[in-house]
Length: 108
Image 1 (cartoon, rainbow, N blue to C red):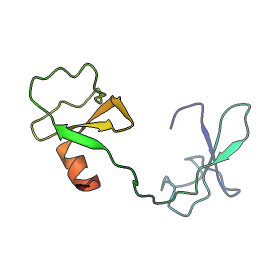
Image 2 (cartoon, helix red, strand yellow; image 1 turned 45 degrees about the horizontal axis):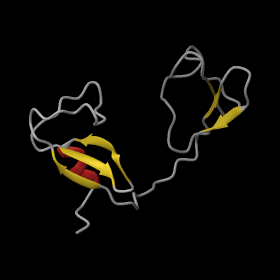
Image 3 (cartoon, rainbow, N blue to C red; image 1 turned 60 degrees about the vertical axis):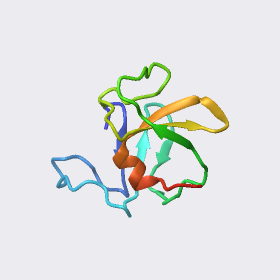
């Protein structure tokens, strides 16, 4: 967590000297506060599924990826996919083969 964020809980101190560093659990009341701003409750996590459809094609080795969004630390590999938004074909990004297999299935 960055220095400018402060964690606030249910009347408990999150000071490491006073509490064992166990980290928040799924049911903890976790709030973030930016300096000079109100607290933001970030404890209400919900599970959601993707409902839209994307278009994908295989990544081709050595292809130009200047118009494709790629994570800076990731190196494209054979088996990865180039995905795009059907409503905005210019919005393209790289999907790793592992991520695509885990999170997407064919819509055809």
